[in-house]
Image (cartoon, rainbow, N blue to C red; front, side):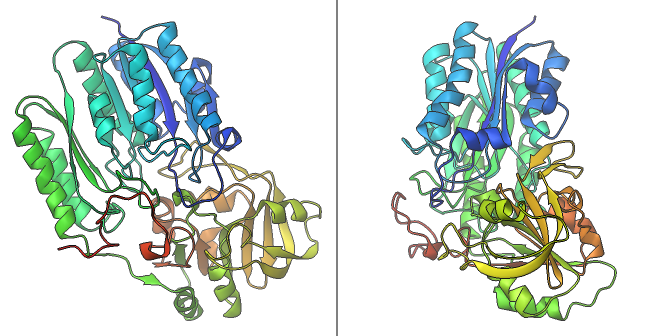
Length: 493
């Protein structure tokens, strides 16, 4: 039997503390591909869409792909952008009612007008397709999963890796459950366990630490009768919403009490180990001291500024780390990205080889990460900012920094860009003439995803808190919408 399946990708991770709204142009600058004719751009990479298409080929689905929409993490999604993209999905469902729906969502999208973007997407879709039609969704491991989302989607599958190298796999997993549901073989629902925390202690790292065992337990439980998926979500701490924090989901049928009990045991473990942090967060001064004495000639020191991670909705324009490295006269080094469209425009008025003086960074909100730096440097490369990834996460996918310049300041080659994208892939340096592996020190802005591509070339990795918007110190952020008490902001036993 051939089933008609509606698919779509609509993803945004919203940092509600970011003052820059996410409008339609933000999606257009990243990914806004409409309809089946556009699936070639994402259909053979590590994407949810690729997983949908894998299932379509395996099961002979007739797929209507409404839209692939993604914008880099930033402030709340504007009502206009949300309504426009959602209308493409709802209109497709109205035009031809599907037998099932497979949506690739994030789980931490916050529009201007409500605090649960994914819940709103599902509610609007249910208004059209009815309450019973099978709906499967995939979520990011950093989803803040609401009760509403679990009520409206029978099937939920989250990524199990961070860095997220299994986005395609997660969508294929969800699609296989959807196929069995459409055939009438199973009647799944999703149960939820939650703890009052901003986020899992280590942001859900799956390369080391307690998440390794938790994911192993999840996979083992998925082999039990009437269990179809187990998802462990670390939560996203930069969304100031009531339903924030870690959740454990079990998509299942049958004995709900037993399945709920399993979810609660994993949630208990997250709670009991809430203060077991794996990372040492150095200050920028400490990092610069380490860089000054680093001597491995064969592999670089990788410095990751977690706090200014554009992948968590930070501005990417913090100057604190760069200033500390320059003060220590760190040589044979590269740094990126420095997100500053104003500086990039200024640099593009010059030519490669020119020496220029200008203010860089610190232009969004200097209280998070430092004031602008006035620097003099030589322009090494001018570019449109487009590159194609070749690493485990972004292989085959186009990334666009917008107008981009490599500015050599003393011993550091600085990648100045216009669009805020975290460092996922070596090509984000190499495409602009910088070979990270040939440098002694590599400073980059990313939280964890960089490890997939950069760890293999690293002699040593250290992380720092520059005081930017994704600072690990949650007390520096002004939360207003949380359900209190909540860890670590309040005393809790």
